Image 1 (cartoon, rainbow, N blue to C red):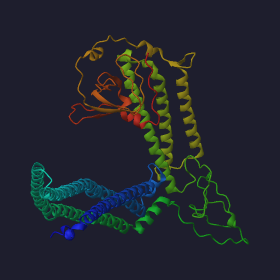
Image 2: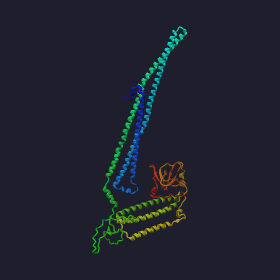
Image 3: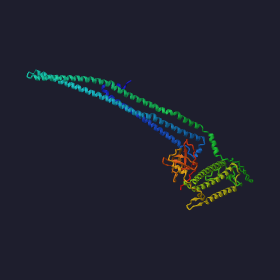
Image 4: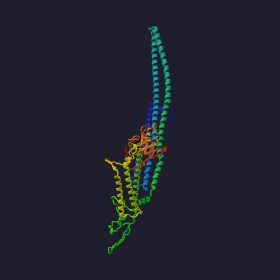
Length: 580
């Protein structure tokens, strides 16, 4: 049903009604833009809230290689960790809300507002054009009317003048005839003006009818439809606003269900048992203290597990009353200073755990040192076969250091394994004499290692050289290795690699890389310890395989033969070899 054309009930109010519609439609566009701004700010709030939730979850996540990781053995702390993870997913749903509102509401309405402004501008332009046309027709009608009125007055005056001249006997016949012709001319002009005015009037009435009953109602109808579409569109956007929130409710509900499930998985009995396993000492409870009758020679039964020194020399000492210096578990106080190396100050169970942990750490250190030694040995072999790549003697000093380190670590392992065997009952308790022999053995090994290091020749600048390494140094003629750089067609890329350390490629055929740099692999290690890489079309060359971490494509047939494990396992990488 047409409503806006009903505003044309009064012809005189047309212009005012047109201005009112122009103001109202502009207000409607302002309302739409205000709603778009509201939704945009809501999306910003959702993003900010999600970011804060993620930061909060990250803040309380356990740090790697810290004491906090051990605490997550307990069901209560694992439930807390599950809560943190679910809160991270919960934050993700608020990001989904922001993304959907931005795409489905903010983006769509912003485009629609631009289209609405163009349509509104077009309709009111047509309205002004119609208004100008009817005003032009009205001016033409007024001009025709004034001309007709003027010609009629001129014709009356000419007629009156003719009659006056005709009645005057003193006027010549020629003057009378002239006056008569002039009167007839004026009458003819009046008739022509009358006909023109009549035609213009009919035309204006037709134009006015079309203006008020056709053109303007059509324009108002289009404006009304435009306004109704705007109202419907903002209503649909409000429904979408609610629907976007409703869509994530099931997922948020699952997150909350998982948090509840994690809370229900907390087992207080299990946590208590973990505490017992972690801190149990292995001591027997103290025995009963017998009554001491000072009227007779003192006899007292001493508990072997509670009142005797853990590292005594086998001689029992008399104990008097409450001044006993023996262990009265669990009332003993821990020594806050550094404890003995064999952890003999700890209860048996705790001591066993500490010794086992120490043995495992030492074995890991031995494996790291062995990996480094194997890698350097392989690099030395490459240098011997290809002297142009480097000096084989330059790695001998480091190899000697690694050998010494491995020997020392093995002695340490044997020592701790002996203590561990004592605790676990696999070996008899060692006496002080056995301990002294163990210390003498360690000192002898240390002395032997040091003497081995001193046998090497020392140059004036403090560097170590070996004649045997120099004698075995060979000069290999440039054959296949050099020919590889003469290929005109570039090799295809078979993967990528990441530089673990900085390498200064000073020799021909090598290429310098910076730590952390990503490059392309065009030829993997063929067993000589070198990998061929490419930075761009003009820069390619070889780098030590142990200096990069290679990621071959799935389609690559050859398996990666890298010494990356040596470098990643080592706490401090071997210094790059300086080429000669």
